[in-house]
Amino acid sequence: MDNSRVMVEFEISGDRFDPATLTEMLGVTPTKTRIKGETLKGKPITNKYTIWLYSTGYKESNDVNVQLKEIYSVFIDKIQILKQIKKLYDVEFTICIVIKIYSDEMPAISLDHWLIEFLYQIHAHVEFDTYVLN
Image (cartoon, rainbow, N blue to C red; front, top):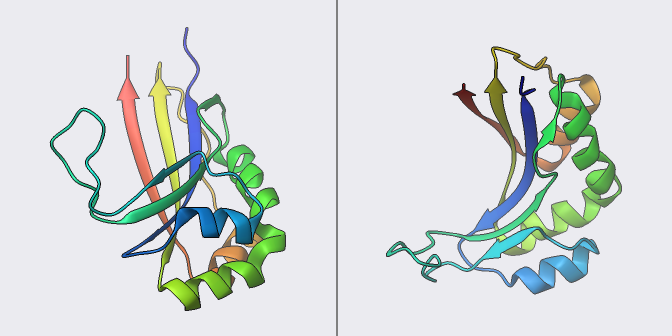
């Protein structure tokens, strides 16, 4: 039997910025970066935005808050830097919660007060992607 897996990503996206500059400002190495206008590897699609992304990767989980706390612990002390980045580069912040459901084992989904306060302070939004797999 497979257990469900959860991945949480913190994404900074915008029209134009240098991902290396954000990496230096935050002191966090991104999982992935993309530059607006570049072609995706092996696909005839170009990036619509520049993206700086930090991910937990997929992990077996019965509660999305486990992975949310991983992201929170990395960025909670960087709120002022994130606000500065938002002002300088006119970027958007997104927390994306990706859930792969196996064997009807749906993880608990809740957004605790500590996360809501963090999201509010940096003016971020949340997206949920769910996939039911057999």
